[in-house]
Length: 59
Image (cartoon, rainbow, N blue to C red; front, top):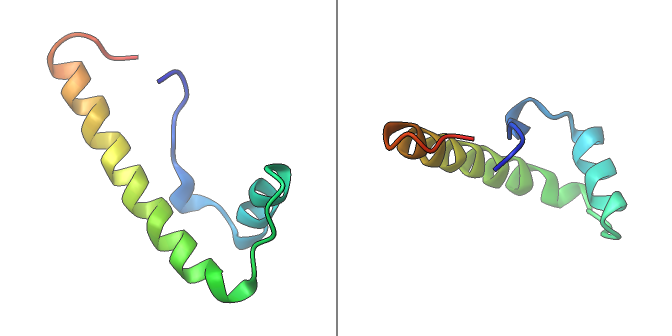
């Protein structure tokens, strides 16, 4: 874990660009679900970072 992960601030265009960069096509209808999943992942990422910090192994 070497980089900050804060996708909840990503615009829809940024999400599309990231998908395209990975060779994916993201239909507009999928964007709300993708944004919700990214928010959940960001929350989990913060939980992991907090746990690592508490044991003195933070990135």
